[in-house]
Length: 146
Image (cartoon, rainbow, N blue to C red; front, side, top):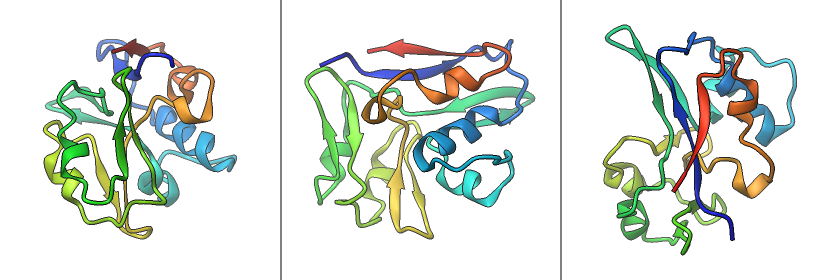
């Protein structure tokens, strides 16, 4: 099993265009011609880029070593693998929010309309390179390995 992968942001190169968020949703849904402010993008993205005091900041699960989200989930919807990757199984998720509260970095959030949690998994379950990294026009995103 390959090591956990997660996107990291070079804030100096980021031009907060939202194309990484669009690519994230397109990779999961197969939808095309989405724009950054489309409701489905804002709802279904698994990573977020926003300006914090004028500097772009990335929110994406880094598969931390302590995995507090997995211990908090009463439905075993979050699973930590030996390689460090934490995967969320939406079919098991009830949207209770315990994992959201347990995440120390704020990188898990709820999708209210679907009543499930969501988080970045580096596109590992769908194979290939992370869609956000490929879509980034400035090369500000890259993949780190845990």
